[in-house]
Image (cartoon, rainbow, N blue to C red; front, side, top):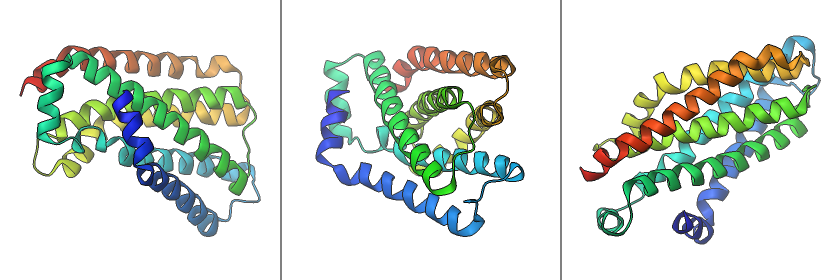
Length: 214
């Protein structure tokens, strides 16, 4: 994890590229949809656009988890670190990175397109669960895709059936927070997202050593 932080600090262009991607996408949405004057009818559009931006941001940010590692460095890691330590460090680092990008995206998005969210703490909780969920799923998928020749295409294909159900629950949970509904209305989605995150982390912890040895 310290290695990833040092590399990210030295190669600031990667993080700055993600910020540029977020900023330009939000600005294009502003120009295209003109949602600055918020109305009740535009609430689902506002919410869906935010999660679409976060989804593509997470794919671009996490895809490099294993794809940027050369074979010599992986062999060195194999000799000094346990595979469980590798996958958990990648998941924690990617979760922190995605959480930071999600908060920055939400703040800029709300500033440019207006902020219709009535329950801010609940909405931030959905951002937290989304950042962790995207990171846990895409980190393991990045490890699998890195073993193939066309890794970027394979990652997009493998991540689709995993991310879409999670994305639907996140959209519903955040929409409830936008409407200011009772927090009990989002309890099912909250528990399901927590269960999915725990399952993915557990499965990654158990199965990654077999992938690592290959």
